Amino acid sequence: MPDALHSLGQLQNKSLREHIVDVLHEAILCGDLSPGQPLIETDLAAQLGVSRAPLREPIQILNSEGLVETIPRRGTRVSTLERKDIVELYSLRGVLEALAIRCIIDQSDPCDLRRLDAICERMSNAANANRLRKVNDLDHSFHDTLIAMSGHCLLQTTWNLVALRVRRVMTLRNMRNDDIRLVAYSHLPILDAIRDRDGERATSAIEAHVATGGDLVAEDWEVDTMPAPLQRQDL
Amino acid sequence: MPDALHSLGQLQNKSLREHIVDVLHEAILCGDLSPGQPLIETDLAAQLGVSRAPLREPIQILNSEGLVETIPRRGTRVSTLERKDIVELYSLRGVLEALAIRCIIDQSDPCDLRRLDAICERMSNAANANRLRKVNDLDHSFHDTLIAMSGHCLLQTTWNLVALRVRRVMTLRNMRNDDIRLVAYSHLPILDAIRDRDGERATSAIEAHVATGGDLVAEDWEVDTMPAPLQRQDL
DNA sequence: TGCCGGCTGGCTGTCGACAATCGACTGGCG
DNA sequence: CGCCAGTCGATTGTCGACAGCCAGCCGGCA
Image (cartoon, rainbow over all chains, first blue to last red; front, side, top):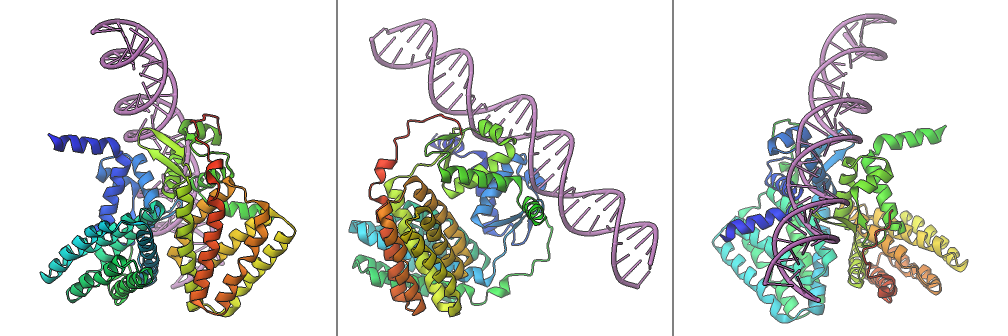
């Protein structure tokens, strides 16, 4: 039974702490925990069926990641997202991906691009079929793969933090349907530039791509972000 | 007595947890905790005079920061630094600072540059006086100020992680004395380009500056990094 | 009626203790 | 003599409980 073995292996490598981090990530990214909502350790521990001790460390991690904000002796709450945060997020994301592309061009053997090609093709198909969710997932895959292919460990670490926020933004704001074909097709110039090993063009392409996405997201952000009158509903 | 008030204010805002983070940062950055050295919670707690609970959370934070590496159920040790890490660190640093400069050029009122001017001048003086430590401190100030002036909060957060590693690298490898004038003077072209609002030139200047620094540091890195045969000396 | 002080409930910060797990040592067997 | 299994010490993972702090509420006073 390979399934049991697999889950066992996960349990071995993943401590309860990491498991809780994943659960909290999921809760925040899915919107189960909405921005501004307080995280009461006692309640959360009860809901997760664990003690407060293994819960406090994940909260610290989420704090480092910027997903929650902790005020000493006052408590923790899910961080809010202003328009400024969106703009900053996408500008940083742009330079990180540009760095990744430069790394890829400098080092890679060309055959690697097949993975990106495949993702792009599937994304185009999904866009034509108007499958929004699928396009989003493949979009994330594309950019994750791009970073991974750079072989730049520190960049990968930094990206993980950024990607977390990007996913959160994408969840909080549902992309408009008429954008998705544009989004899907706008990956192709990037790929072409990488294939030609044209660093200049690839950098411009990725930064334009990310900037466009950022603008689309930031466009009418304030509509979604509620003043958050300290709602106290449970998880 | 303003001193007492000040320290009181610090005690209010800084929980024991944050205090411990600072202590551990200092210990790792100063080299009191050397790369590869294990962090035994029990011992560390005894030495700091606290319980293990408020110690475990800071360790998680340092783990997120990449200063230590934790293996579940195996323990935590101070992370090592390979040459590859140096190269990656400085390449990432380059694009972050380039982004900061672009932000500054896009938004700033010109008078801001006085702070950087002042730092540069003091750095040149210190270099002429051959005061290595002073030059290093001012060097860090220059780049920290650059980032802060960008007004880019997320960039600031990301930079803090990078700067932490940079400081650690600088501590582990003592800069050669004959380099410091070069280092001091190489900030001036960056400043000039910002003054001229020439984004292209400023970006090139900062990336060249950082790359040079990275090359100097990485040059003979392996000499310093010991194989670390699991030395067990106490803190 | 408005402001100031004490009080109280809830939450976080911290602690000591127990349980689970891993690595290393030791002894026995082929 | 080399390899494997069992055991033991050390260290981490987890828990429940207590203390301290903060915010908000309530009562008294000008």
